[in-house]
Image 1: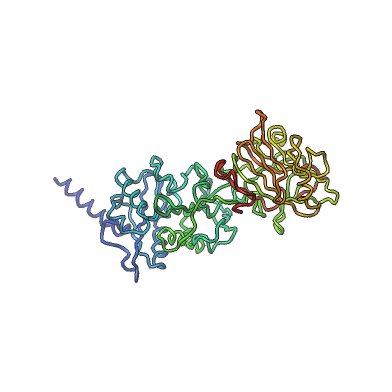
Image 2: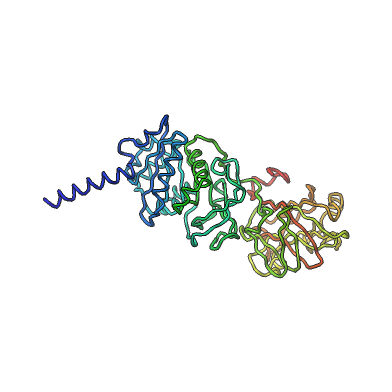
Length: 461
């Protein structure tokens, strides 16, 4: 009997202590002290695995940021807050570095219903290290955590400056954090706002296409995730606080934003670094940030885009030959397997030639040694050496189309069972010391093989 009383008193004292620190949402409303606040946000930070010591700083920052937008912020680690009636009080729920299994089946169902009715979700950092057996949540957060290297500085490259979470950030955002690698790349399902430049730090494992902040319309509601926020210092950093505030504004519906998946063309060479690219063989390419160009040197090698294995796509790029005679050899390779041997692309892929001085099946617009371009159309469209030309190379199934300055000059179908266009990589050839070729504005759009079948070149650019 004495033991039961002691346990009861201890439990009551603990509940009072926890209530003073984390304010369970089922208790009296917290945040009413925010003058003029009409909307509320719930911050949920329960952990069933690793516990981040930055959670208190995160809660404090979110309360301050909410107050700036007249949002009352409640914080809890009590999963019983996840009932339909209680969740209906909130414009958004923040999963602040939650880890492991934090909700039971009934609570999960309540949260799914909340989002379906237009509720907002904001995931911070280890929110991606949460609820691995709940497939709905995996779709909501966008991608699950795989691992991370040591805390270190890195460059975050902002892809969308229109969203409130990234509106005030520079193109290249320098910051220190614990940089997560994810089990999958969410790019085809979400709207990527910012990505990590894996060339600026050690330990990235996503082959150079490394989304780190994104948003999406999901199941009737709004979802935003940022991979930052491991360190206590993050929540005192004005830039990160602004990023978090913008995410909160979107999740609560205070600020509208385009969060449709990135289905248009995206830059895969940003004019500054070779993030996502890898050199195979001798020579290489130099980057000139002043004019955003890639310039070949030496060879014969291949710079290939290792970040993405492609099935159906449109690749656009500009190219220029430096020599006055037009005899600068280079090409764009497609449909080859991953390899550090540049000859793998030659033997197992296809090259779209640039040099205009060779035989018909080995000249500008040709599928090298397989099919000549339409020479009349090619000659009419081709600009002279020293000027920029543009290619669109479109692959759908085993069909390969080449457009030169907007004019179709080749339509080729692969029939070789030893080669396939349906699952391979793209690359740029550096042919040799005497071949001076430049590239710029390299953009990629992944296509639906059926719905994009009739798309015109340039559509959606």
